[in-house]
Image (cartoon, rainbow, N blue to C red; front, side):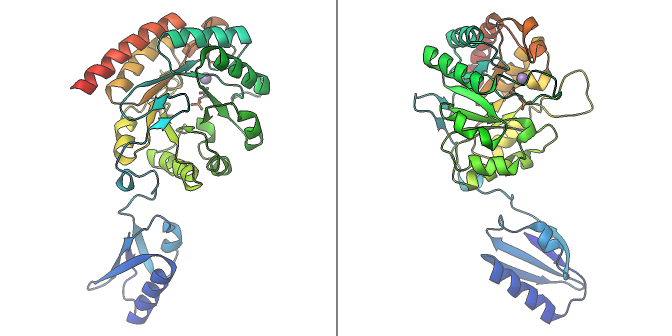
Length: 337
Ligand code: PEP
Ligand code: MN
């Protein structure tokens, strides 16, 4: 961290400020005295330092970070890829492409079990399905809630596929006992109390990027979970808000290699919410496999035109089957280059 002091500060004030810094933080301070102002260089772990607090100090003109504010999620401190391994042996990260598939929301036992069987046959290793749905309208279908979680458990028992499903409130955590990967949706990416609580669980967390959040903010949200002791975080690029209206969101495909360079955490791509349009799912999934995503999370419905949620972006099990074959070929080809 670099701190530029205001011009013409007395030696006494500069020394006092440096002492304050070394007393409060585990850092060494290098001082450069220029003709008009003094610059301090802080060496050590500056992740715990609040830039705004420093900027508000009377002697300070400007603050600049040269090191990222996240530590546990940072590849610099953990060069090897994190691999999430479930008790059943399924993995996300570390050189394989994980396919997570299933409907936007659980609608009935027949629906979730049928889709689970079909996506499994096409190579999906995880079943997705929302029981608690974050809908823009309070009048829209809100999900089957606890009953939906029970139906997911039935589908898991029938197929052996681990379950990925979204939590919307900390209060619901006791209901998530049989859930294998807890999803934090885009709208809750900065629900810090929820993140902190999930940091004390022992389940992997699939953290989706917020609609209008930067990559650094996503990594800071991962840091919230990891700071509590839960280092099993999977990051998800699911499209962001831009001025483009042709698609529901804009898939930030460059976020995948960017995040993988900055962090050791696995990154999955959700082409369904990124585009909102079923025919776009395959090309976007292929592009995600080509840039090295560790997995895909895709909405698959047995009857998209009657889906209670996100039918327009849902693909059928047959379409998923073709997509899965193509993305595997792309993934294998790119990995072998
Ligand atoms: C979902 O996965 O069903 C969902 C609501 O996603 P997002 O939070 O990315 O909108
Ligand atoms: Mn959805």
